[in-house]
Image (cartoon, rainbow over all chains, first blue to last red; front, side, top):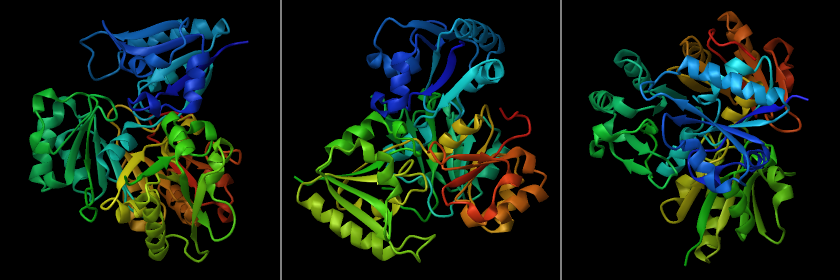
Length: 234
Length: 234
């Protein structure tokens, strides 16, 4: 019997925001895998560190420092081979995913390599999208409003089109693009309607209006929500 | 001491997809409230029915049958008064919300009435959005793709604009609008790229290509995902 590859959404950062299902599978899988930097701790693993029973085999999927924004094909290729061997030997593998595995998650690149040859189950998690809204005390969207999720690395023309659409907007992966995005929002008269969140639900969480954010200290895990003018910020 | 109003995301339907935090608050709150039809069971309550310890006071927020699509202002006004009395008497109130409270949730209408005068905490949940993607075994969006959430009741011109944008699309609240949306997708040549899901993660879950859906049997809790042509369906 082959093992199952689980893509486990562990939620946005607060360990209590893991689902009961992900917690059960996390504790029972003989093998855990997770993305990690070249040296040092994995964010996904740190979220669940206090929930682990101990004694599980761990496979960190380490990314070289120079690979910042786009998936390192070779890293995923190699990880797929290593995890595939565990599955072939009958061992279930749980891949820890920040937020939700299929919402801009790096699990998607493993899934693309492994779904054909192996049994895969994706366990959805609380995404950063809804976590940010909860922390901001601001609804994402209601009634017949359109909600658009826009990656910050997009170019100015495309960003501008989306920001001008009148939809509710969530700008993700803000990181080093903050200054450009802030200026664009202010040019469009949307600065007052925007709020910045970093590390939502974690101990290091910050919520700020745009003009109080230090543009040089914005992490990858940050988001800007822009709301319809009809909706009051709490 | 006044009580706290909790907006508890209970997840998309599978009781195991509740978070550890929502489960803890669900079990400890002296008062539970939830939306319900005029007669019969509440969907939100049915999701957590087997998790309740018993002995909690329950406040169903019942909607008259004729109110289908838009919030009944008087129902929310009255519920806010009743729940406010519990809070003033020092009792915490947990409002059960399908999916996530701030992702098109009816909790938003209670929040708008109660957030100023009371302490409110929103506990994010797994939304139908990520649950549908997991059940379809299809990523929502990756890299620098734009993801747009479009309510099905929108008019044809607006729907068409969004569907033609090249974004990944989630059409929510499909219900009685199915026939019109299906025809629009097929006219735009997107029929093959679209998948229909109803009651994701519940025992009654259905996943179908558009041409196999019975247009007269589509519930409100249904979604159509449309993916970028570059991404293969699993």
